[in-house]
Image 1 (cartoon, one colour):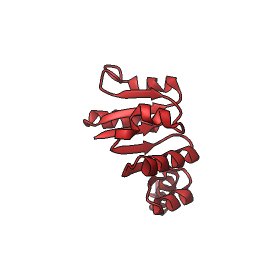
Image 2: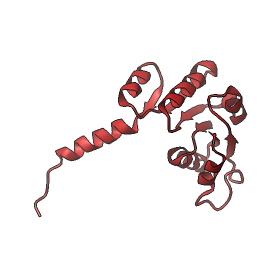
Image 3: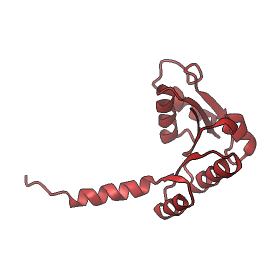
Length: 144
């Protein structure tokens, strides 16, 4: 299984390392060349020596996506810091390149729900945080 992850921040790089360690073929695309350091951090060998691919480029540019391997991706993950970028590139992956498994991080819970209804697999850290806080509010307080 070939996985293309756009965004090598804390989430994207951790996910890339995990996917590679579990035997998947992984390519990461990020516009910041220094983000590559997150992929190497804590590893016994470099990202590339481990079998990973890293491409520097802007995900909104089709050439960068192609260079990163979108045309053969089985799974596409949009995990940049920006909702707008994630949603646009996720739709490009789904509609233009025909990738069936497209997973996109969306901070805005309302937008995540709407785009989920449109066929994107959305993950909203904000929604999960709200749910966790609500659950914590319901937990009984133990007397000291």
